[in-house]
Image 1 (tube, one colour):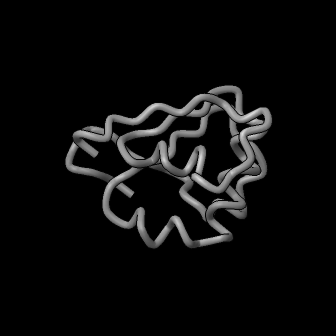
Image 2: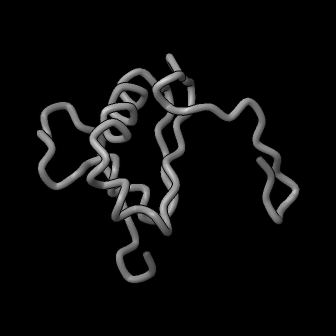
Image 3: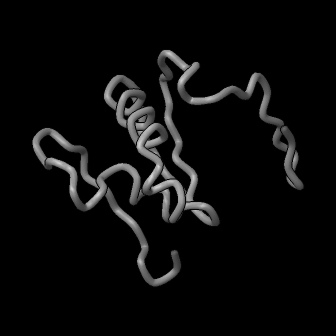
Length: 85
């Protein structure tokens, strides 16, 4: 996978196949509405975020880190810029 910028993503695979990660960055943007109701995707994010050393997001990706219906017990703080995203 590549982008318009000098960044290349290698060894890309489904989240279900990723056992752990040191850094999890959740992207936002187009597709977020569909992803918010994808229970497999949300479960994989929760599983990976629970063990990652660093958890970050871009734009509306922050919504996935603390969905409105989630339990706040032990949850990490989440910040988003609602005026732009």
